[in-house]
Amino acid sequence: METNFRTLGRTGIGVSALGFGCWAIGGEWTDPDGQPLGWGRVDDEESVRAVRRALDLGVTFFDTADTYGAGHSERVLGRALGKRRADVVVATKWGNVFDEETRTLTGGDDSAAYARRALTASLRRLDTDYVDLYQLHLSEADPERALELRDVCEEFVREGLVRAYAWSTDDPARAAVFAEGAHCAAVQHRLNVLQDAPEMLALCEESGLASINRSPLAMGLLTGKRAAGQALDAGDIRSTPPAWLPGFSQGGADPEWLKRVDALREILTSGGRTLAQGALAWIWARSALTVPIPGFRTVAQAEENAGAMDRGPLTADQLTEIDGILSGPSATTPPAVPSV
Ligand SMILES: NC(=O)c1ccc[n+]([C@@H]2O[C@H](COP(=O)([O-])OP(=O)(O)OC[C@H]3O[C@@H](n4cnc5c(N)ncnc54)[C@H](OP(=O)(O)O)[C@@H]3O)[C@@H](O)[C@H]2O)c1
Image 1 (tube, protein in one colour):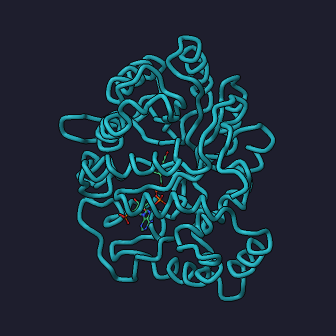
Image 2 (cartoon, rainbow, N blue to C red):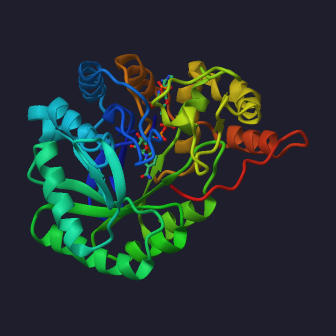
């Protein structure tokens, strides 16, 4: 790839062009009704090995949230980084309230006082003195409240607790509110070859923000390993997907989505890429500001995903070809979904 590095917005914070998403490695947690919010059981030792392998392969950016596994993801990430903490850029999120004992999400809190409590707890779990990128996790928070939270983030920066901040939201109008802040560096939003986000990318260009891309593999659909009717483990959010989670139903992966993946397979696997690597290559080709953060839970996934950096972005012609396939006569339109 021409360059495997990105700068987070106007901050001068450098990261690898690929980050790693730490939702799955949080393990199991649920909402109060027992709805799974994690990706099922994980092996913490394998998670630690996967993070360390990613570091060895040049990945310097890790995205987690306090709520993933009700604090567990932050702990595992902190342990895995150990003495190498200073060499990496750690992003975490706040806004969701959870019970660490019962591993249950209990609600949300958009108050300034809670932001400070949440940051203190994240620093403890991550075993660090500062967070590089602190992200508001309440994707649909009231923009007026967000203005206050933006000021709180600026305070955190002045105190040296946070280097930069962002909003995790799919709404460009909300992202624009945070973008005005001096140390706002990025927006985290959904982007993958099946779910484009042109307005958000335009905002990133205009405002000088990095575009951090969640669900870059469409929650695993773009890895090619999901077949129609193939059941997912109980405890995996995709086995009983909430209304906001597209691409899956009670019966497993949505056949319409799988058809679109199949239609793109040949282009995405060009140049010796695996399907997952091709999906990441599409994102880099889409905009030079993008930093996809694929989730992972094994060393093998870490190696495959990090390997995408060796092959770089797709070409502009391939992007045009993909647009043609996705908008062609037999194409189905992905359903509109609210942000999570
Ligand atoms: N609101 C928010 O802020 C928000 C929301 C969602 C995600 N995120 C962030 O974005 C990150 C990534 O998004 P995502 O979790 O939605 O999903 P994703 O990156 O689109 O898909 C990740 C999943 O795909 C599978 N996978 C990954 N690499 C693979 C490979 N090479 N081969 C085969 N399977 C592979 C793994 O699941 P299996 O092995 O189980 O199939 C993995 O957990 C999260 O970890 C989190 O940090 C943030």
